[in-house]
Figure 1 (cartoon, rainbow, N blue to C red):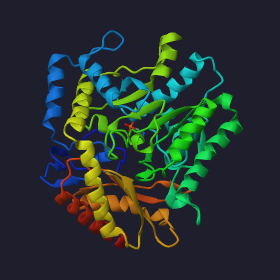
Figure 2 (spheres, rainbow, N blue to C red):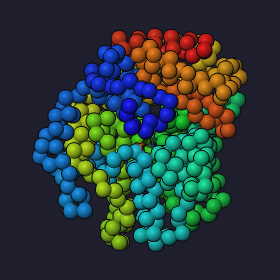
Figure 3 (cartoon, helix red, strand yellow):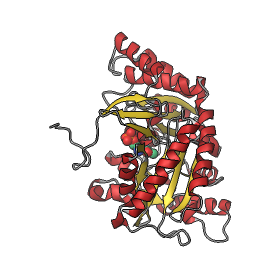
Figure 4 (cartoon, rainbow, N blue to C red):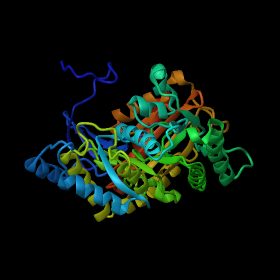
Length: 441
Ligand code: PMP
C-alpha cells in the first residue's frame, strides 16, 4: 500500500512507467494516447531526449544555488530567449515553479508597482467569471470557477469578476461577433468606474480560457478594447497564458493573435513541457524600472525560483519550439485536428460547440443542441467520459466548468505538437467511442 495522498481518494490510477512520443505506457504495457498533454503540459511528447539531456547536464554541473546568492547560466539564457520572442514591452523574466506561482507573483507585482509608482490606493484586481488562475489563495480569488472557489470562500481576497468573452453562450441573437466582444469588454470600464479607477490595480484574463471552459478564445477586437480601457484608467493588464501559451494556440504567445501586449504575462505548463516544474512571469520594462528606481526589491519569492535544472529544461523546450518549427506545426496540426473533429462531431446531437486555436481545442457537450441546454450536473457526464476514454487508452481532459451557476460539460484536447495524422484519427475514433459509452451509461 502506498501512502500517496491522491486528489480523488477512491482513485487507483495505473503506474506510468515510460513515455514514447505522444504515448504514456503503464506497468502492464498498456499505451495511452495523451490527447490533452496531461493538462496542456506535454507539448513535446514524453520522450524528448534533447530536453532530458539538457536537464541531466545541468544536474551534473550544479543542481541548485539559491537566487538570494547566485544566478545561473540556464536561468539567464532562458530569460534572454523568452524576451527575444516576447510581446512588445516585456523586458524581464521572473522564474517560478508553476502556474499558480506565476499568477500569484503577477498579482503581487501589480500591487507593488502601484505603491512604488505613487498610487498606493490601487489594490483591486478585476478578473472574469469562468476563469482559472491557479489554486493558491490569491490566484483562486482571481479565478471565477465557482466549484473550485466555494469551499474556500471565507479565505479568499475580495476581487471583482466581470463576464468572460464566451460567444457560444453570451452572443445575443442579431448581435455581431464584434459588437458582442466590445459589449463584454466594456464591462471592464463599467467596473473600473464603479469602484473608482484610483482603487484598481490590474485586470487579469486568459487569452484563451482553458481549465474552466475548454479552449474558448475571445472574439476578434475584444482584447484590443480591453487594452484601451486598461490604458485609459492606468490599470495594468495581466495575461495568464499558463495553459494557452508556449505555442499551444499556434502562436508562441497566445496574445500575439489578438494583437495586444500585456504589462505582465504568466506562463508555465508548456514552458517545462513536463520535464521539469517551471513557470515564469514576464514584466514590462516600465514595471521593472519602477521597482528598480523605487525600493529596489520585489517583495515576493520562493525557495525554488530560478531553479537551474528547471531553467535548463525550459531553455531546451523553448529552443525546441523555435528551432524545430513546432509552433507552426501546432497551428497546422491544430487545423487538421479541428477539421477531423468537425467532420466527426459537427452534427452530433450532443456536441454543441467545437472551438479553440492551434492544438488547444474544446468541445462543449449539451443535452439539447438547439436550446444549448447542458446535461444535468448529477449525471457527471464529464467524469464518466474521462473514465470511458481512459479505458480505451485515450487521455483527454473533460471538465465540469460553470455556466453562470449551472454546471456544464466540456472536453479539452491539447495533444503534443509532434502529433501525426494517424494519431488524429485515433483521437477522434477513441473520443467518439468513449462519448457513446458515456452517453449510454
Ligand atoms: N492559470 C491557468 C490559466 C491554468 O490553466 C492553470 C492550471 N490549470 C494555472 C494558472 C495554475 O497552474 P499550476 O497548476 O501549474 O499551479
